[in-house]
Amino acid sequence: MDDGLAVEVSGLKKHFGAVEALAGLDLRVPAGAFYAFLGPNGAGKSTTLSLLTGLLAPDAGEIRLFGESFSGAPIALKARVGVVPETLALFERLTGRQQLTFSGRLYGLSAQEAAGRAEELLELTELSGQAEALVAGYSKGMRRRLAIASALIHAPRLVFLDEPFEGIDVLAAGVIRALLAELSRSGVTLVLTTHVLEIADRLATHAGFIQAGRLLDEGSLGELRERHRSADLQGVFERLISVPAARSTQLSFYPARGR
Image (cartoon, rainbow, N blue to C red; front, side):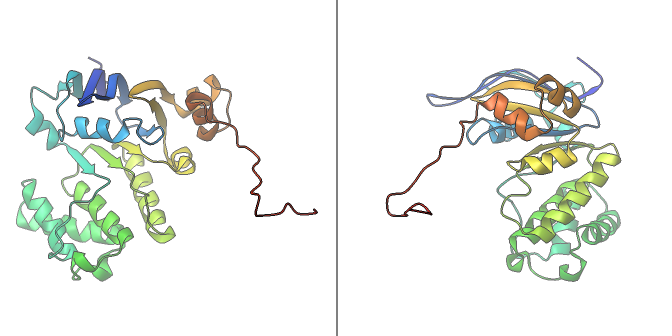
């Protein structure tokens, strides 16, 4: 056990029938880190987050959060964690404000405390103007911001976010980036999956790369760039994942310019 780690995973395995999703994954996320968990589609990122948040049970391996075994105290540990899944679970017939206060009450906050935190989070996520509108009428970007606010209502010290920038507009992405940067400055440990490596480069302090259910490498951004002789995470990704070189292709029904 390392008291300096918010997340410690050893030998994590998960199968779905004959498919091996995780093949003995090891992972170390320092407390207070902004950890970008990166890899191609199907690498095992979402499966890992589902295991770390208790949505799935591992076939083998150990998960420790804040130095405590997840299998020994899952309820107590879940109360210290915030989760923003890729597929959002929001109540369509509630207003934005009701969604947040309800989430706060589920985490044991008093009605007054939940209402106060909801108001602050609505302002931080720039949803105050739509606080009384039904979630059913929210855009995808608004829903994503509301889901993040719901995950923060109980002031967790560890937050998992699965593809929070997927399919949202520039405005929503900017609001989310600013909020996550502020959380990171406040010492909250963030674990983020994303395909947008530019965002990971801008926000993250640490990164881990996964492929075929195995961790290829992890460390601080500075360590990874130096180790793989790259100026950015895109270069590290290409070296670790072995991205094929782009081919020059000419379609027969599009004549090449100058012919």
